[in-house]
Image (cartoon, rainbow, N blue to C red; front, side):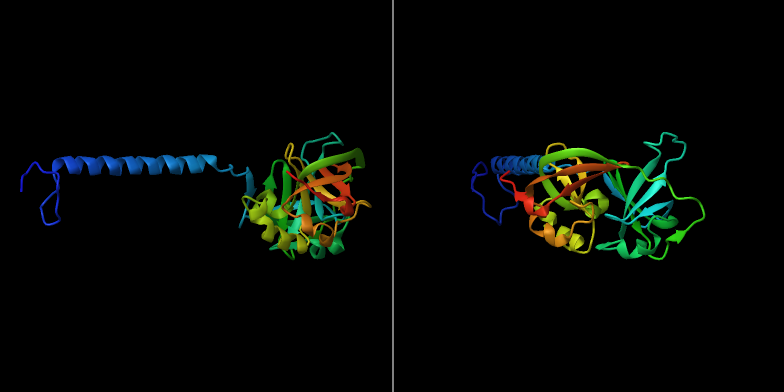
Amino acid sequence: MNGDSDFYVGYLPQAPSSLRDFVRRVVCALGLLGIVLALTLVLAQMPFANSYFEFGKQRDFEGTLIAEPYPELIVRRAGEVDPARNTSAYLLVAPGKHSADALVRDFATKQVHLQGQLIYRDGQTMVEVEPGSIQPVGSPAARLREIRELGPVTLKGEIVESKCYLGVMNPGQGKVHRDCASRCLSGGIPPLFISSENGRQYLLAAKDGGSLPYSAFKDFIAEPVNITGEVVQRGNTEFLRINPTQLRHSSE
C-alpha cells in the first residue's frame, strides 16, 4: 500500500498522518465543546441561597417561649439597651417534619433553657429543638414587644415551608420541592410567604392572629400565588394575616 494514502485498515500499525491529525483535531474540538457546555450549564443554574443548617452542632439557648401563632423563643440581645431592638426571635421546630407545638405546650410565656440546632437565612433564624431539653429557669421572662400593625398589602409570591427554606434544604422552594414542602407543612412546620418582588419573608397567619391550618392553603404550596392580607410585626418577625379563601393562583 502506498504510504501516502489516507486509506486505513485495522491491521496496519498506525493510521496515516493526515488521518491521525484530523481525528486528533476532532477529539480536541469535542472535548473543548464539552467543557464549554458544562460551564454554561453550571453558570446558568440559580445560585444556592446563603442559608445554613448546623446539623449535629447542639447549641444552648435561653429565652421566653411563645406558643402562638407558632412556637418562638424570644432571646435577649446581649448589650442592647434599646427596647425596640433588644430581643431576637427564633422560630422553633421539632426534628424531622414536625412542629414544636407538643414540645413547648407546657412552657408558654415562661423563661426556659433549651438545646437545639440552628437554622438561618437572610436574617431569619430557627432552632430545631432537641426533645426533652426544654427546662424552665428562674430568671424573669423577656418583655414581649407590642404588635405593630403595618397595614394591608397585596403581593405575588410563593408559599414555602420555613424549615427547609431557611436552611435544611437547598433549594427549599419551587416545584422541585413541592412534595417535601407539603409533607412538612402538613406536619405543622410554619408556612412562610416569600414575595417574588423582593424576597421578603412573612409568616402566614389567620385573620385572628392564630396559626393557619394546612388545609387552608395546601392547594397553593410551591406555586405562584396572589395574596392579600394585613402585615403585622412583633419584634423582628413579620406576619401576614390572611383570609385563605382569597388566595389565588398567579399567571406569572
